[in-house]
Each structure stands twice: as C-alpha cells, then as structure tokens.
Length: 247
Image 1 (cartoon, helix red, strand yellow):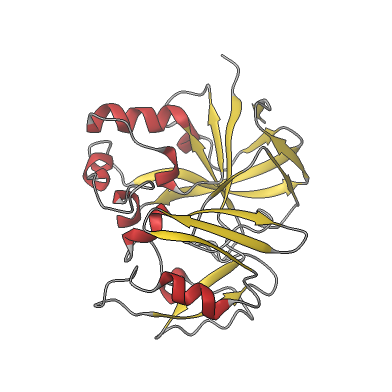
Image 2 (image 1 turned 45 degrees about the vertical axis):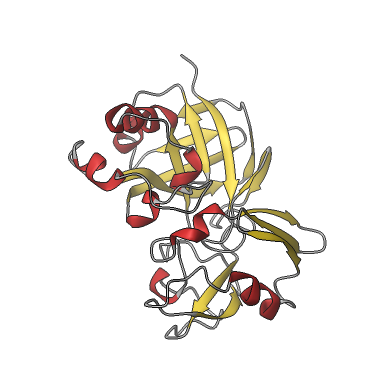
C-alpha cells in the first residue's frame, strides 16, 4: 500500500487554535511556518519572545482543556487571525497588535487554580514547539486507529495536535523510523524522537471537555507516546495526497 500525506495542521498560537492546510512550504532547519509562532504567557512565565522557552511558561490545553476546542484561520499576508470556539463569538485579531482583545476573549478558559494568562508573545526566530530543537510532529493514522480500537470509540485526530499525518504504514511503524529520513512530497525530514504525551490529549477538540482516558489507553501499548518529532533537512512543499518514502 502506498503511504500518503492525509493531513497538514498548524497552530498559530500555541494551544489556542488549530488550522488545517492543503499544503505547506517547509524550510530546512525551521519549524512549520506560523506553527506556534505566538504563545500565551501566564503570570509566572519568564518568556518574553526573545528566545525559545519551554512549554511550562505558557497557558496550554494540558491545564486548560477548554482551549482544545479553538480552531483558527490565519491570513499570512496581513497576519490576521480568526479564532472560533463553541462558547464564544468569533474573534478576529492581529496578534502583534491586539493582545489585550485576545486575552479578554480567553477570559474564563483557564481554571482559577492555574496561573492566569497575562500576555501574548511572538517567537523572535522560531515557533514555540515543545522541544528546543525546532521540529514538526509526524502522526500515523494507523496508530490513531489502533488507539481508537483499544479505547472503543472514535477519536478526532485533532486531539493529538500534530502537524503532518500519513496513512498506509502499519500502526506504530513511525516509532521504528527514528534516526532515519523520510520524504514527504518535496521535503525531507529526519525523524528524531517519540513524542511523550500529557493530559492535553484527554480534551475533546470539539467541546473542550476531558472525555477520554487516552493516557491509560496508551499504557496498554507499553508507552505513552504518539507521533514522532521530525526536523526538516531538505526544503520543499508538502501537500495532501503526496507520497511518503522512507529513505
């Protein structure tokens, strides 16, 4: 069976909205364009945008599950972002100029026992991915189906907050590809490491409510990993239905 690209996603503001794409131009050594370019820093954060900062500095789905239900559309030319959530009217902002409006829109999404969001920061040179080494995440639909089968009901793939989705490879094959390179369309990625998961995946991306015990389900496979981190080593465009070749 031919392995193909079946999904492309970016998250312009870390943990605050996903956006499905038809194609993306990847550059060697860089994160996906506009993926996690902005992040919401909380009241005990040390992040100011001048350098990469660890995820603990930001308001995220792991501690604020309601954020999982945000979807987004970004107009790159004007850097205008529209956000949607089932509990809010739509919001259209330019993140670099309208941070206060965004924070007002987000009010109430973070539980009171968690550090509250206080400012929006933009990465000076790269997105705020979870690892300091710039990367994308590569997800396998067969692995997703294996989790669905084990848990006993369908799950939206957006729950995993991954960047690139493939189909046609066996379940968990991506874990065996670590250290190798893979060509997706016109780009080549080197696979670096598994992605160990947290409570964020328990949140439903349609409702923002924790409704599935996915971490215990992953435990039944002998790990808490889903997707692999990848670094772009050869620039190129990746589009839906492109073929995938393990090099």
